[in-house]
Image (cartoon, rainbow, N blue to C red; front, side, top):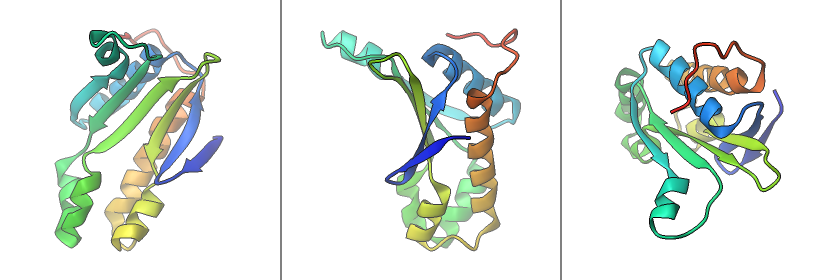
Length: 143
């Protein structure tokens, strides 16, 4: 997986267009029973105010049973929760996604010792891998 650190997030190329990338991420989250709390379509929002923006979407998701464990240890991590993944298209047509860098976040909030941090990191790596490797798209439906 070819990723690049950027602030407290990791940026990676997707092999798919934005709708397919988002559909694959949603399918995996839903299959794991992880609630998707919101989905923002920044391109549509820009169009509503007569501005142009390439496809840009954000998924907001998380498992309260996991996030609560982090907040019990340090409630200020609530600022970072629920988790988000941004997916966008660059001018050249390439699609990227940004996921939180859990190692940086855990260190910043003093939570690196919690097993939940590793579970979240593993999930984010799986999500990133799903869109960076070929997948069976027969069941994926972009919205």
